[in-house]
Length: 260
Image 1 (cartoon, rainbow, N blue to C red):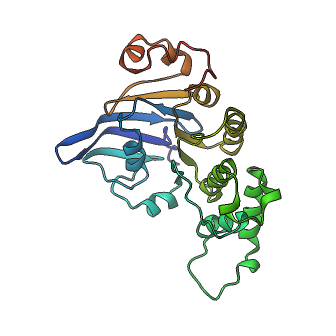
Image 2: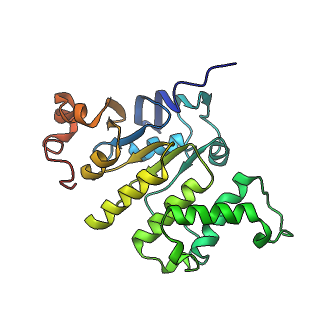
């Protein structure tokens, strides 16, 4: 019997250029199964580009991306998703005129083996409905089950987005600035939600709020000018003089939860 791969997600000397401009400059990262990793860095560091490469929106110029030991660079986003990686975006990406429950049910259909078939009545798909109800409870929106997505509060829409991201059962989850635009109290609740729904999963999140980073991440990857200059526990990254000089300065000297 072959051994399971050591890493859930691995980047090997990843590069991405747009014309003559190189955005990702040999980024390497190895994330173990179940780890929660926050990707931080200054504006323009390449964080969104990195997520776009991992999720298949962009093809790398060179380098490798491995998901559970399998190369995925060059695959289409839906192919990568079916291999067990899901991603949320900075802005909500919902079916605004469908209810909360209907949004979640759409998210689970493919993962349960249902394909496009107009003659099937969704109400009769008991496994899909049961999974959607399960996720509904996980994201604490059961009381808003039949509300149209467009009528949710901003924080509720973000929670629904998280639900859609995990509904298909992905083992690796990418969250792009999940708490952006939230109040401090909303952020605190949302961090706890993320912790609960990603138990047993591998998580990568881009985040600017250092309180969120310290409250959520097992490790921090610091991306500066397209390179990962540090990857370690929050405490060690906070005390890394090279990191502070290159990016963080006084930000990590502040106590966790001190804001952006």
